[in-house]
Image 1 (cartoon, rainbow, N blue to C red):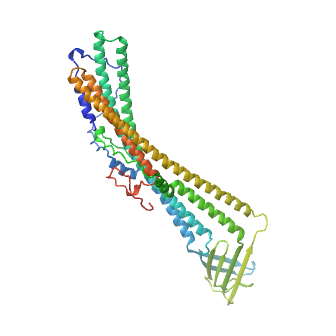
Image 2: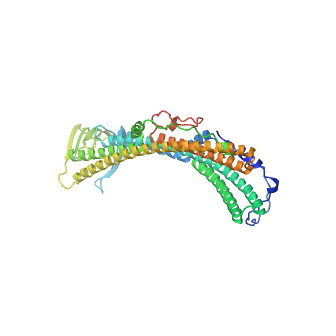
Image 3: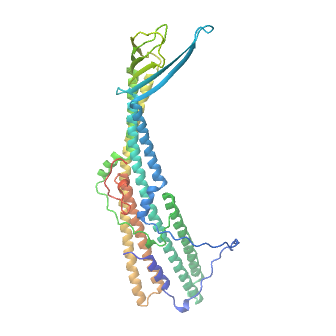
Length: 497
């Protein structure tokens, strides 16, 4: 059973004291007011913004700076993959070469020549560095996708937690104000009792100290509400208007269910957690570096070429030619075409030229050291992957244990609420029998409201713990979240963001 804080404050304020005990509390010393500036013309007040709901919070977080930053990082990985694929595809280059020659300098004529060239190249062998660059970019995109999903899920959990913190702060402020009001009434009774010499001076001083503490707690509670609103606004990246009372907030989510098969959650997390994806990609990159180092040692720097057309001679330049080349180590094949923009005065013979060049390092290249370094890097990446898997396993099990602990605290808070409500019923019955005063009923009523607030806080904490477990096991899918549904749990997992 939930108590409305508005009803609680009304009941507390309407409970009167006997007329003989009514006195006025002494004013609390305050600092002198600061000088005020000249009055300015007062403008019409702006219309009040509607109170923020949880569904609106989950919608606004999609436009927050953190959400947009995660989207941009994923977009950057997509563009890197597009660039790598473009480099590995067909590349066409067009160029020109112009020259102006005068031989001999004193008596010769100026002879000009311009040649237009075009080249088409592409990676054709599987070990080409551009193909490996594509595979590296694909792994980076998969890793960025996992990071994006985790960042979005983390922002959703933060939004739910911040909204709940604002609700709890508002409820706590109302209870603190009620406690301060009750402390004022208790001090009035204590002063009347001291006047009648029924209590010692020390008891009166204790009541005065209790009032001061209650007023300080109320001021701190109001500060907590302001800080909670600021924290939520910073998360969303825009100002928000919180409900004025805890009852105006969205209801506390229901108590989540306890985790059943933790091993299944761990297995799921080991497949999709960004830490594991990142470590697995780093291991694959280290393996690629090792294979590249091995090929660099085993493959010679071999290039083959062919050229056909009006080849140049000892007495003149080349005319129209076509050719091709293949570099075995880089895996790149290219075709070239070249023709002069001005025909030669003499006919050039047609010919064919074949070329082959190869080089193999023998000593002092340092390639063996590079292979050893790549092997060490692969071993380190394998250890990092195993460490990441162990960390994820522990994290999921810890989040599951945290949820079970939170559920236990919900049960404890519910039991405490039942006792507080039973005490309230008993105190009211004793008031009807003339055994207690209205102050005792007010204190019991406040204790019941505090127990209800503690139950609400424990339930909200258990709900957040369930969200954290869903995030840790990658069951929380932000891409399929319905903003109008306040419970984003137990959603199916979608594909790549």
